[in-house]
Length: 229
Picture 1 (cartoon, helix red, strand yellow):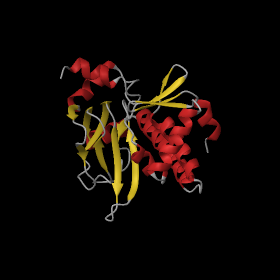
Picture 2 (picture 1 turned 120 degrees about the horizontal axis):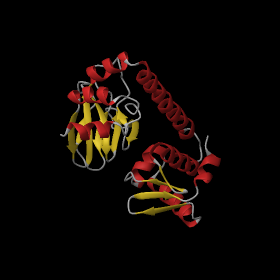
Picture 3 (picture 1 turned 60 degrees about the vertical axis):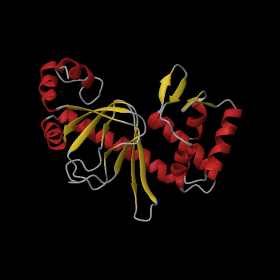
Picture 4 (picture 1 turned 30 degrees about the horizontal axis):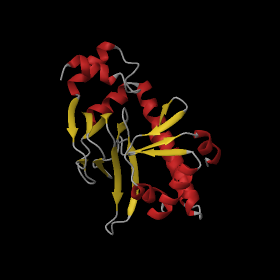
């Protein structure tokens, strides 16, 4: 790929935004470009943890299940995100799988090179620690709402989590472009598919959201902010 394009693309990621042109040029030597079709796996749980990915376009689902097929962990990655943060500096293998929910474009950097880069740049290392903290905070909230006894409340809190994690501002509205099915939302909320459909229909009736194609458009973000845990 054209090195200039790589430099310009790297600037879209907050981690690299403050680096000089010269430093960005030096990083391009270790940057590789890949595309994946919807349904392909970027890596599987247990694979050697060799790459850190930079999402250029599309959505990826991170997932871990036990031997019985029960969901243990699920998360989503959107454009201009870096993943996986889990296992940084410690793990030799991936602890979950990454599946393309859409066609995706990514860069990847060898994990050892990426970690050495962080060690050499305190500002970048602090940024990664801050990202860890944000991810931890979001998942702490998920643990809290998943224990809420009311199933409908769990669905609403799950939508609020998705708003925070995947939502993109579009004027006064927030758009979740990730193609989430009612089954996906039911997994996140620990409820049935029927409960999810019921809640979505009520929110649509109240003009709080619109589901258009595979997008969820939130017309009233304040509604979710008020009920946020």
